[in-house]
Amino acid sequence: MPRESHQIKDMDTTALPLPAGIVIRDLVSHEDRQQCVALQEATWGAGFAELVPPAILQVGPKVGGITAGAFEKSGRLVGFVFGLTGIRHGALAHWSDMLAVVPELRGTGLGGHLKAWQRARCEELGVQVMYWTWDPLVSRNSHLNLNKLGARVDEFVENMYGVTDSTQFGALPTDRFVAAWDLDNLKITRRLAARAADAPLLAESPLAAGGPTAPPPPAWPDAPTVQVAIPRDFPALLTDAPDAAAAFRQHTHAAFTHYFALGYQISSFHPTVDGDGTYLMTRPL
Image (cartoon, rainbow, N blue to C red; front, side):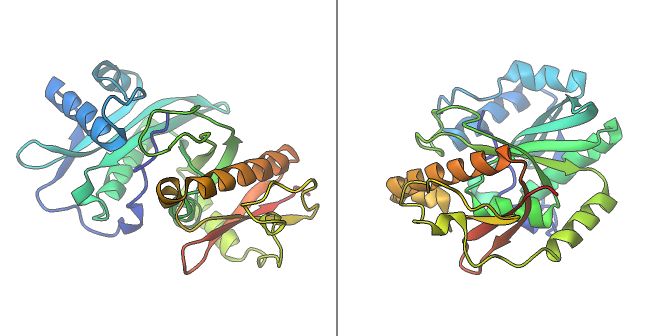
């Protein structure tokens, strides 16, 4: 279910104060949950088939899930976060499934406050790692997840949600990275320090072999470290240049499938001043 669209879009403004008059609290009433469904449809499209229904919003917290909303004094819901808690890789984990903020409050830091609230609740539960998905082609989310939050890529999943009816993802396969965010500040600090000192970018990248508008090369570079480049604004390409968006999906899909199968891992992400980005992938020793 492609629920990560606005999950972290404005979390680079987490230093901002909570917008005036807004409180974050659990969803406690049928009206709260109905407002949450309405915000999902406003965000991902009317009749979106993958929305979380009121019943799941209600029972999820009874087994360790989290459903919280940001409310104005009037009672209007202006943002929410939803996730489920369970076992992953043998440890207690939380899957952060959805986060959305109304358009007029995106970029105010509200998404970051919702995420911080969610993390605090996870720590109370004894959760060790939080997970969520993001599109590898969305540069701003890659920069935020890897370089600001200090998350790591747990896995690459081909066409994770299938072709959806969301208005935001078009008709392309929904390739996704699974982010793993260790709720351990020491681990995060060490990871960010290692990324800051990472090896410089190579002169050539897999996408240099013909570029994203050409078919993937017959043989990918065999090197200890390789690059995979992504576009400046993939969501805009989906609308303005769908053929280019499809070419980027095809090319990066082939690159990630090839290198992850060989055990390579994403070691760092390097955004450029104009908004493009490049992943550094490192072969295991």
